[in-house]
Amino acid sequence: MGKLKIHGGHTLEGSLQVQGAKNSVLPILAAAILVRGESLLQNCPDLKDVDAALSILRYLGCTVTRTGSDVHIDSTTLTRHDVPDELMREMRSSVIFLGAILGRTGEATLSLPGGCELGPRPIDLHLEALRTLGATLEEVGGNIVCRANQLVGAPIYLTSPSVGATENAMLAAVLAHGETVITNAAREPEIVDLQNFLVAAGAEISGAGTPTITIQGGREMRPVAYRIMPDRIVAATYLSAVALTGGRLELRDIVPEHFETVIHALRIAGCEITLHGQDLTLTSTGRLEAISPPVMTRPYPGFPTDAQPCLVAASVKSKGTTVFIENIFQNRYRYVEELCRMGADIKLEGRVAVVTGVDRLVGTSVSATDLRGGAALVVAALGAEGETLISEVDHIDRGYDDIAATLRTLGADIVYIES
Ligand code: UD1
Image 1 (cartoon, rainbow, N blue to C red):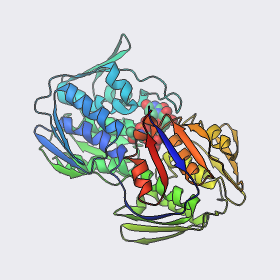
Image 2 (image 1 turned 45 degrees about the vertical axis):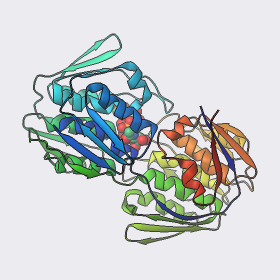
Image 3 (image 1 turned 30 degrees about the vertical axis):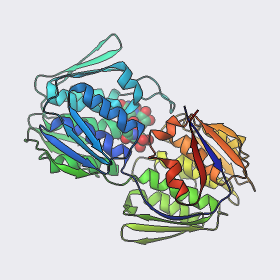
């Protein structure tokens, strides 16, 4: 597994086109199963998780080709309805294939996802939604086997607004007979992107972005060319990096409404942020103010849990104390121990992290604990004195399309070392 070597302390400056959104492209790749014919997805980021999703599609019998950021998927030749354990293990979000495979073939077999680095990641809401649409579920030797000759639309109430369960329910409902209404649906922008793809392909869906999504199932799905929206968490990561190092960053072709809470927090921290349509410019002196009131992660439109680690990293040299409260995932603070090894002063108590600003961070050897925690270490290393060596960078490659090359265009001293 490779490492990232970062020599911190450089002011960053430049302009970036943010990559396509990982959390959009994964459910949309699953949605391509519902279309007979060749779909084209544009702006697909080059990520480990996308590679894993493409491997699953190929295993199922789809024809998949990739040229740069264009991915062509032809699911006409889909023959299988199972995803083997080794492919499931490559990406936790593979459960997103469940609803689409079931809808298309009448059967789906997936191994049950285990715990993950963010704590237990149950799929009860996904399964309950499929059961409501008429699927029978059976656990056989660590696999979940779902069957339904014909799914039938129904009202689905999600007891909490899970992103993945909302997507799985939408995907299963598209080929079901009749109407499905999902209540207490997740409202994340990625759900809207999924709806936009499905509608472009012929589905009749409305309401994504609100708590109620309505799907009239059984419409004919035709091949489509679709451009994946920009990644709001990657945007938040690079903004956090420049907030900490000081400098100026222009992000082009983004959707600022997708991460308003992050922009708001960075402004409170003293960054100057200007918006011009789909472009944003952040200027930072590198010496941030503490953020108040506490930053609390919440389902969209609240502050995104995925942006929490990078904002914590950006805050470690602030003047004063910033409090973070994590409401979505247990174990989301595993990276904090690594930040403290670099000199950060962060006290943890359950869901609460109290970050007291220090004068300096010092580079050392640290290990990425998970995707966004790994990105937070990159942010901190850019603002640290001396050299930081980050191991376990495979976690970071799951969600960032060549983070080292991207940051080098801003003037960072960062290289990927094969080990
Ligand atoms: C998605 C994102 C992830 C992000 C998260 C929250 C993808 C590929 N991943 O993950 O980056 O951090 O949304 O914005 O889009 N839960 C249950 N039962 C279920 C499903 C979820 O209890 O059946 C709980 C989870 O344990 C968690 C909470 O609900 O505490 C939110 O999870 P969910 O919204 O489902 O996140 P994911 O879809 O897994």
